[in-house]
Length: 116
Image (cartoon, rainbow, N blue to C red; front, side, top):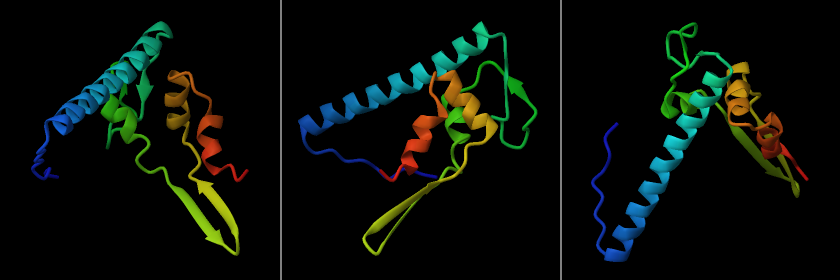
């Protein structure tokens, strides 16, 4: 997958883009660090983050692999007759484990389907 060239004409846009990319890099680094630290503290390894090799275990997963575990997640929103229904794909055990490593409850995810 190639990226289209990005032409930013204004200096304030360039500054904003650099800040956004810097923030994204910090988030990626933080996610990776938190998961690695928690796995190390718990003396555990995570299985299922390697495509094509679900039994391979690691305590040094990358953020990209962690996010890939959520690639099949779907939020479906149906609006009909004045009401809205939402449905989210159930979390796999691996996805639940990754959320737990972040210190998040699956309830955070399930709120996406909350119709209130």
